[in-house]
Image (cartoon, rainbow, N blue to C red; front, side):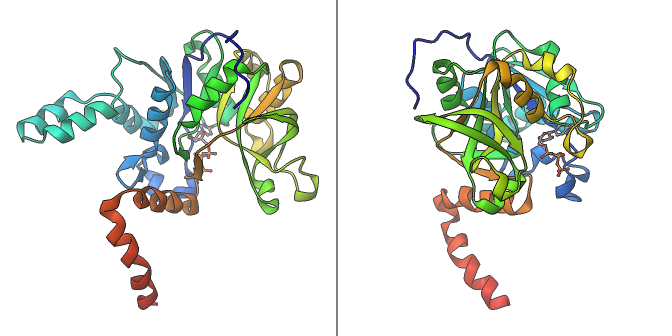
Length: 302
Ligand code: UTP
């Protein structure tokens, strides 16, 4: 952990959840169900992200969604009718659980804004500009699931308060071949979990990668990011890339990486989702029997 100076920064009060993407890698599952609602066993991805933000003390959550993905709104907010029905049937425990999961607008401010066209992650973040509170903002990509305690955003915000750099991005070590799938941080030094950086390179060839520190879906961004995004030209894939805007702004503001404690799963890919389900089930004793017997059964069927 970085040396904690007495915090000279405003608290991070807002988290932005970009959830407007098409989720094409998970078709046909995502034809009618938003990717962010796909379950890791019985918990939708978005629930993990919400809980991580709640644990980090976020006051306002801004969901950048698409008109076709209204199921997310339905999921995130309380459902008094369903709660009533469950209680009438004597299923109080389940009703309590649903209430705990849902966002109570009296405790956390909830905003939905629409990104009518998926023009890229940077564009999605820009769509939230009018809804953010003062100070730096957190961005959480729900399909990047990070399991473990403390929650990634909690430890990241704590480190951000003690660091001097304008933007902070979560990073993890990847192997040589994987660098070409990520934004890679150009690391210049290290202070505990905080990596000093002077830029990042999008999807470099292994021999050109400045480090093995890959940027994953948690960011704490200086509020000036919105001004930069307004003039951000489309980048890779013709999309307005958040990483391009971070890199541009960081020349003046500074940039650092944060090596989080937990384990990250790329639940935007089928391999990552399967790994996440196995890891999550592995932590729950009631599934031990299934996990123990699954492998021999599959082998026998082959
Ligand atoms: P991804 O690029 O992983 O999501 O974006 P995608 O485009 O939906 O997935 P594929 O590649 O087609 O399978 C990461 C996060 O950013 C959001 C997505 O919803 C996801 O949560 N996103 C992406 C937006 O909100 N808007 C965009 O224009 C792009």
